[in-house]
Image (cartoon, rainbow, N blue to C red; front, side, top):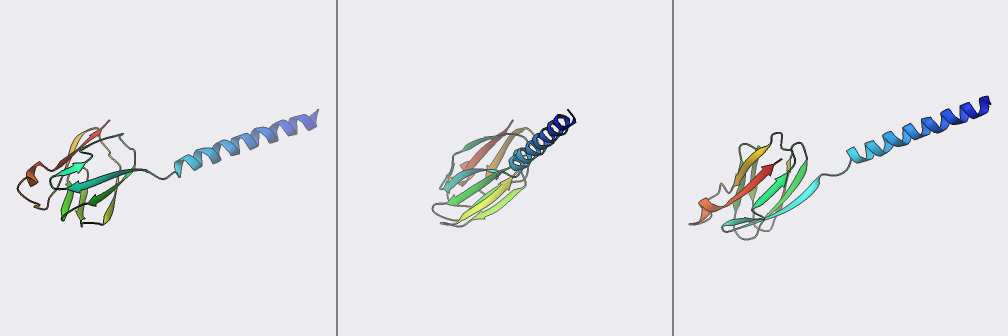
Length: 120
């Protein structure tokens, strides 16, 4: 009978180890990637919905001229050179609606170039 108790404890211990291994694997998963393109005078997509505390990587590419990618509230400040992709890590710490703008003058409609980030 003691043999069954030892076997039962071993199985329980292995189950606990497996549970922690699965939890650890999930924690090490790569962040979600969101692809964004910039061109006169828009970001596409022009709106993102994210979860508070969720880490994402924004992969941003300019299709035409030099653009900026800036949000003081989200702590983003990147320069976009045509044809190059910039990776911007983002982990929103507060819920709300935030705006990312182009902060490099790119033409007459420059002031309308915005991306809205909704954090739930």
